[in-house]
Length: 307
Image (cartoon, rainbow, N blue to C red):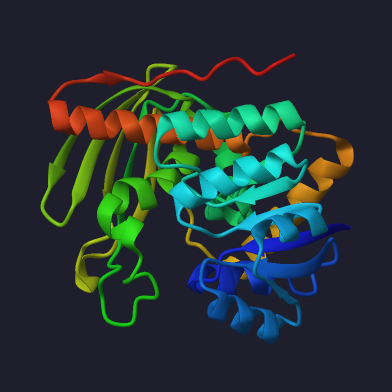
């Protein structure tokens, strides 16, 4: 069992992270810190943990941290926590720049800690099983992913998220899209992209094995236009990502168990780790550049993992 702290006080932190940590058989939920002390106090009272006013004090008191912060804030604090020897369960995207993502990877590798990224659907067994079967089948020529959300709709808990409003679906939903195709088609090596109304990005991605995928991403659609679909194409026909049935909190609890198991075994290398998070950031940065400059952009490869 690891002592866990929570960084973040927003809706995602309160309703998914904190709820998943409470009563988890592998986690002792110790406390919460956030940039809004009042919200930290509310979550702490709700879940029976301590509210910390000093983030470094929380880092000192735990073995691992679940992070539910804006990506630019996450990257800096996660790097600090890794240097202190703390295991990390990160949110996506892990950062908003490739330099910040690379710095985080460097800190994690140097410390020898485990650091997973909570790309939600990868911890849902119905999705994990589908992707494992698809990867074993092989022979896929490409895929089409359309993720259209409506964060500005009445009642959306993410309507007041500044980074989401600014960066749009490319950065909010792009990591989810990549997490559902890279395990099957392989890493993305180059991209082309265009933007459209409703802060929509249309991305054409070539994968290392030659397959080509398309990603259509927006969180600024109307409720009537929302779509969540990924379809793989190959010689045997099309295969559609299954309907999501596992609850968000249960997916998060699976991610916690995965991190704890990796930490206990001394495993830092994992398909769902911060290196994969860094690679997703590299694709998103390249897609932004491709859309702005009207050209195909190669995706920067990561520095080899230290031996």
